[in-house]
Each structure stands twice: as C-alpha cells, then as structure tokens.
Amino acid sequence: MIRVLESPDGVAREAAREIVALARGSARFRIALAGGSTPRALYRLLATEFRDQVDWPRVEVFFGDERCVPPDHEQSNYRIAAESLLSRVPAGKVHRIEAEAGPVVAADRYDALLKSLAPSDPLFDVVLLGMGADGHTLSLFPGFDRGGHAGRLAAAADAGPRAAVRERVTLTLDAVARSRVAIFLVTGSDKAATLRRVHEDGGPTLPASMVRARDRTLWLVDAAARG
Ligand code: 6PG
Image 1: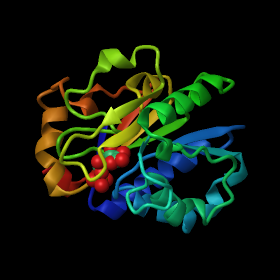
Image 2: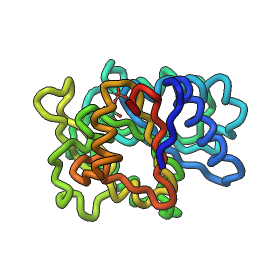
Image 3: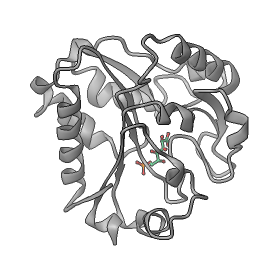
Image 4: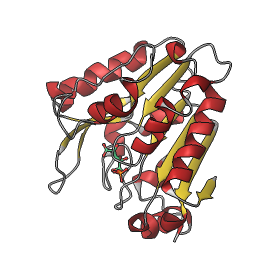
C-alpha cells in the first residue's frame, strides 16, 4: 500500500501516527529503526510531539542495519537514532548492533540475538525502512546474494565501492517477512524514478521491491518522491 503525503514532514507525521497506533495496548512493542537521514524527522517527532502517546518503557529498540563504524561515528545509524530519539525518551531495552566488531562477527552476534528472542513470532512489530535512489533498503544493495541469507535473520553486507562505509550489518528479507508491519519512508525527487520502478514496473529486481512484512507493508512517500 502506498500513501502520498504533501511533504517530508507529512511523511514523518503519518509514520508517527502509525507507530503510536501499533504500539497502543500491546504488552511488548519491538521496533527496528531505519538508518539514513529520512527518519530523523520522524525520530524528532516521536521524541517531542508524540512522546507522551507511547509507553516507552515497553518499547524494545532494534536496528534495521548498521555501518561498521564506532557508535559515536558520524555515519553510525545508532548515533543518528540516539541523538534524535533514544537520548530523549525512556525506551526499554536498546539493542545496538556492535558493528565496530566487523561485519561477520557483528552479523553473527545480531543473528544469534534475534533467534534467541521469545516469543519469536512476530519478530518485530514494526520495521522502519528507507530506500536509496538505487533501490537498496536496509543494507541490501542491488545484486546482493539472497541465497546466502538462507536461514538468517541478520547478515554481513557490502555497500559497494562508492559507499562512505562499505562494510555493513543488515536484517535479511526473512526478518522483515516475520515482522508484523514494515513502513517505508521515502522523500525527495531523487527517489521518484526508483519508486516508479518499484511500484509500477513491479520490478522484483530491486531490493526495496522484495520487502514483504507478514501483515502489512506500507509506503509513506512525499509528493516529490511520487513524481
Ligand atoms: C543506511 C540505511 C539505508 C537508508 C537509505 C535511504 O544505513 O544507509 O539503512 O537503507 O534507509 O540509504 O537513506 P536516506 O534516508 O538518507 O535517503
């Protein structure tokens, strides 16, 4: 399902409303945060205007992916979330991906943690996602070896030679498939051509078009990204 909002703020606000609604009344609420810059506006709203609508101590925080840098590095997804949200709300357990240990070690640790969670179904209540202009999501980049992720909920990834940080850790498509809801946040005209490929050409080739959550996969896009 795709929902078009007028502006990036509209996308962030709609995502905040969705998260509040999904978290309401659930005894436990597991959310996997997205990396990149788009979710910052959402995180700020959750830490301010929507703060009191979430029972934060019952929220367990995970990450969709991480760059293999220290947690205080400017490229760290954890740092972005910590600055804009996690340092400002009393969230329950926060599971940082220890990506500074290197992609293989960190992915194995994260995979083991996710497999140890009980109850294991659904894995997450919400997985937040962004999409790159090349159609990547999480740290699943075009041409990634989907077969190599068999039986895994987290895996090592390579963002390619042009990425600021090549070595990554990522959730797998199976991890999202075992989660209740996936919410994509996509804004900006630079994403418009790719969004068309994902939604109109039905191209299953792009990682973003392969994502299916168990109950609902919601795309929140602004008018610029819709083109
Ligand atoms: C990452 C993200 C990645 C991101 C997209 C979109 O670690 O880079 O997980 O999948 O969501 O690259 O990034 P922007 O929101 O900055 O456009």
